Length: 231
Length: 231
DNA sequence: ACGCCCCAAGTGGTCAAGCCAATTTTTCCA
DNA sequence: TGGAAAAATTGGCTTGACCACTTGGGGCGT
Image (tube, rainbow over all chains, first blue to last red; front, top):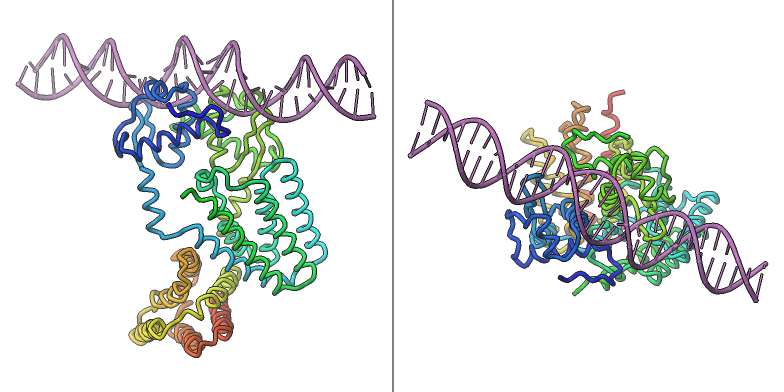
């Protein structure tokens, strides 16, 4: 049907999205049973193992429930999940503003506690981030490590957990899935430059400047994220 | 290896958990490449298609990154997620210090946005809190309402959620169980007086003073909590 | 006529084997 | 010694087969 074999996305992702689209359009109704695997695979023009991979993705995100011997049942619709998100009223804007507020306060608390050794650790994290970018890898892990290392300087594991959770909400694979081209080497390079500016302020022991720069970094990250939202 | 073929869980879920366990135990290191699909399938005693289904689950939850022709790379560890869930590793001290940090930042953001009407609403909340105390009721709900009303002035529902979650952790039934006599009318009256001081600063439109007083309030609340800890 | 049991068909679960495409490594030649 | 090409290794996807569970229909007994 509509599988783009030249796409960089994995086939299971395309097939899963296609099924979500069929559910959203009403072709597959909430609570109803989908066509059997063999038939659905044929309809979508893929093999049964590939369809099964797509169904796993749909099972994980709660769209379908799979019952051996019985069938595949629609348990959630894209609209319902969108509604659920709308009900909490949380958006990317609010998440990033919350992060900016929290992490600016955190770096304010942590800023005076950095030593030469811990600053050096931050430096190494940024160098690892740079190496990731240059070698074509997503520097997500080292990005996260940078934010958590700053939070860790507070010596407060609740703060570390909060910063980690907020970071993960920003980067959850499920939320990122809807933004095909968001994180590019160019955007990662911007993020790295902003991290460098934060580190420079910490190295200068200028905590207020570090706060301003952390806040600016997260505002910029918000802007990059929002600009990539499909409209 | 350790696949339970009588288990009701799907094979891919068991295999995915097994791989998470290997990552957590250090057999597979963050950033490193896993054994190739064919080898890993053999090691775990499952077929390659079954392993691939497990890898999809791990890709979706961010544990691994899969690169065609290159390999499967560990991008997240279970330890970090375990750390994220650690309630036992966190103390009352850390929770209250985290609250102080976050809520001082929040009132800094919210402070300039109060109007006469919203300040009046805060006043009514404090009067309800006083009535609770005088009538022998725990003013917990109005205490919470006071903190959330301030957070609500930011217009950011993520911030409201964070403040609410941190408040609830402070007052969760499980954590409160260990402190049979912590909250007394005397301690509540102290808390109320501190809330009054915060409100006075907001009424004077003195946001920095409101921040200092919110911070002091939560430090005092920490002290009251810790003094009641059984030793 | 209704209820129960058994069997067959239809369903998902897992596997083996093969081939294609991308990446990495090794080898060969200039 | 370095670069290019070939080979090996990697993941991606397919075909086909068999196993296990569920459901529905038919037949038999009360």
